[in-house]
Length: 139
Image 1 (spheres, rainbow, N blue to C red):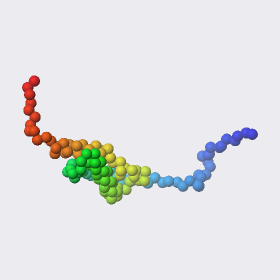
Image 2 (image 1 turned 30 degrees about the horizontal axis):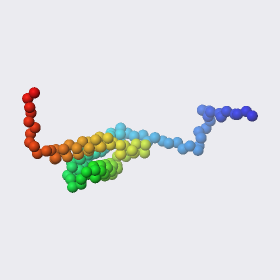
Image 3 (image 1 turned 180 degrees about the horizontal axis):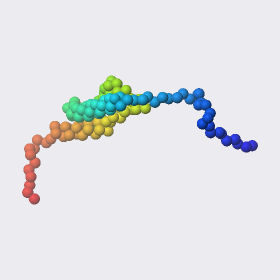
Image 4 (image 1 turned 45 degrees about the vertical axis):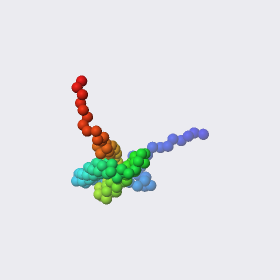
């Protein structure tokens, strides 16, 4: 029994009517600039929320001791990030369906690292030992 080869579609054949044509929306330069400005604004909102959240976490979880303080702060960081995603969704950026994840991923790494940095820095500054200035010894 011989196997027959499938014929490749010929350029003169009519287009298959079963596959709908997907028309890519033609975005004007103004739309692209507006989206970029809004995504930049979302980025800076997240930066501000990360810095503010790190400082708030230093004082808000003061009464919690040990490992629970760390997990409470990380939970607070996640809640603040979800709030920033809701703010981003409310900004009506108008991203195409393929780019919708940009609302979540814009500034994600910067948010996490800045939150942790500010939290650690503010906690360290608040809990400095009260021994006074460190004396410098001559070498």
